[in-house]
Image (cartoon, rainbow, N blue to C red; front, side, top):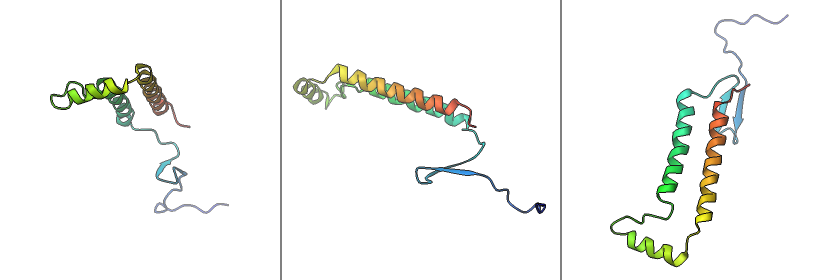
Length: 104
């Protein structure tokens, strides 16, 4: 027979560690709702920032001229920029999908 547990004994819960236990979680806990929506806001902010400053701060009163000159000299690739934007979108979708799925 198993001994009866007293009310003062802590319950043993399975704790899983990720990244050499820098991140830990208890079995059965869900991602908080505010954090799920924070992931959406962070991914959207990163994408918006990327599109706004894709070619640098070209409209800045002081540095704009230098940024435009650098862009003209280096010939920034629009295709590369859109591939990077697609990677940001894919990462955002994966993170949001992962946070909204039910844990087992």
